[in-house]
Length: 191
Image (cartoon, rainbow, N blue to C red; front, side, top):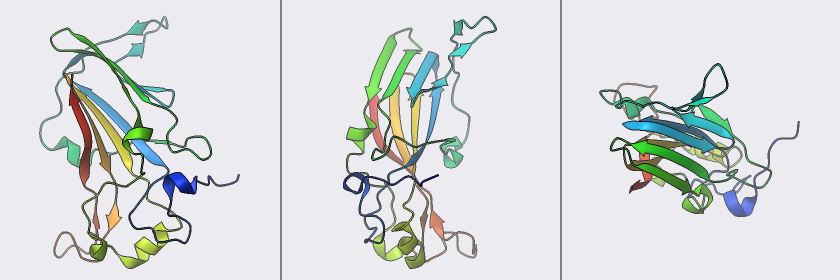
């Protein structure tokens, strides 16, 4: 199997070139619904949310409930990896249909290709803090961030999370903490 080769105009600089600023051409994806009466999130031909097929193959929708207590987002990652067609980063727009807690029905079409048009990896690490060996490897095997979508009542938010290796320990005394993996809000809208 031939490995996927990104379109350098969309995901460059890659393959032996300076990888800074960090850019991506593949990504993981995850989506959650909270405080909705019904919720369907469709991306890359997969459906996320509360919509399910019953034993008779009929669509059943139900409420999503509140978000978990505590800092649940601290461990939130994309559990699905998607590779678009050759030369593309995204396979199409994200489609959301949901009913907020007040009974209002909503629909949104989110174009990741436009939102992340420069394919920049969102992170908070300065160039001089990045581990050099990791950065050199990123010129051959670029970072693949997670794009995460949250629907919460009337608010839709898009986040990105990417691991970036650092020279310094992020938790003093923990030699396994030479990285940042921050959740960065890329976009939000109230409907």
